[in-house]
Length: 286
Image (cartoon, rainbow, N blue to C red):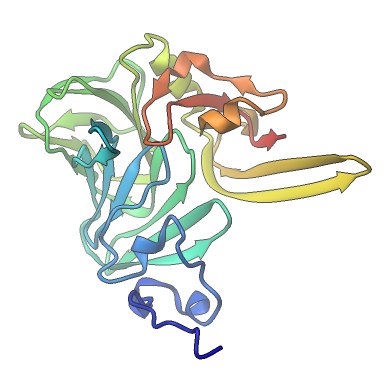
């Protein structure tokens, strides 16, 4: 039959993955593969957001569609850059069937980024007190802090608005045309979510879920007689109850999820695989 083993054009870069993982099998063609090949700075798509992990920042994009006669593409733009100053490097420290966690380490700052498929928020968890700075490619045209300490609705000249939530009761202030900064250091979770322009209740739905953080997921399949059950058990942390976990279901999930608690007040978001729909709860079942 001959030698059917091909060469790997994209070998794992070992400084981008924890030593405890580098010696074990790592998924090929995984949705997060860009984190561990070449420079580890190309986008990954947890859905509904796209994310880049750079040495000095986590960059978040809510993609917009480019529709052509023969294809549809997701357009990248630097909607938000969460700066992690003082970090020397980032690396993947854990993964499961539905998530990957990136850790940032340096002399001062230490942060973790749990990237979970379908999460309604992008989350950066600061383990040490850090002065929060965020920047955008757009212009900031408004900062509404009426939702409470540590939260702000930030309006951009792109026509979008984002909810930013901090565990720390800091005041988020505009700093320059395209920057946001905290009034004092933050510790704990900083979370970002796009508000739906088509659903006025979007803010209420996201605020209800802001304290329950998705950090991973496990798949459970069982069968008996002529029936089979497929479950996703989402792993959570934070101060909120698990039933307030807010995730995003793709069209093929929406048509078959059993006993789902839909969060239609969140609104729908575009992805290249169809519009996602919000769903509450830490377990999905078919």
